[in-house]
Length: 366
Image 1 (cartoon, rainbow, N blue to C red):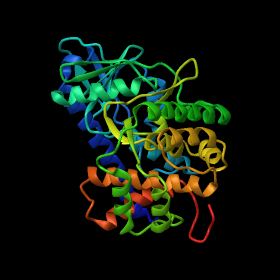
Image 2: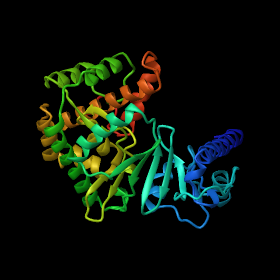
Image 3: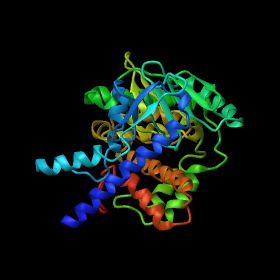
Image 4: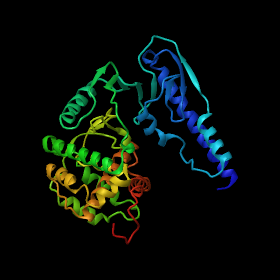
């Protein structure tokens, strides 16, 4: 990279951090009555917290990926110092909360673009649409929580207020414990599928297959005909009430070792495998390796059996399940971005999911 290109990249990072801070500050001040009195300062991840209030450990860990897109480790101390400045220095740096005193000392944004307020150790609140959507949400959340442990919650005006879950970040566990944690979550979803499975009126799996069939496929992705044959082995790909963002950052390890999904501001009826397989994919490392080597076959087999779906304990079926997860995730994202008719963009979205798994190039046998 040339010096000019590095300068442009540094400026882009500076502007991105500043824009993220301004947007979050504006959103926070729009709900000033929820904030505790005091001076709020910003981190580079777009999180504001009252001066003197430490950020919850899980939040610090989960927001690291937002720090500076494109920043790479350097062997040069001076460059490292400049990159750190690019992350930390863009204004705004602080704002004063002096209105009616609320309980929340930490504020940031959600993936969906709403606001998230934290009272560490007690509660988490997020802005929601309200109205009739709350009733549907409550129904899905009740069905979900009967089988998968999650925080208690209540609606307060336009806020969804949840219990603050105290625990560890999954990536702090050793490899064996992390694999066991994800195995437990998959089994929880097997119980969910057994009790809550329903016919998918949207036919999401088939729609996802149709969407990616016309796009350029990433290296190592199964052929459309092979993936279609795998899909055809299951008479009906049903859905279950589910969280919408399967990332290990949205999982807390409770003190008793139980996996607790958090960030459940959106509940959907999704194909039964999307959340647990997405969690395997996002965990990478030991979890993905254990899955590909068959270490999660018993749990995954129970999940598929509970959902009336076909799965053979072979490496090829494991790869096909990952490919189907990538295709469905691409379908969701393409719809969210309204780019379902843009085959180039669809191919790029699919590659974002698939390439991250590192499953090889054409001609390999994953």
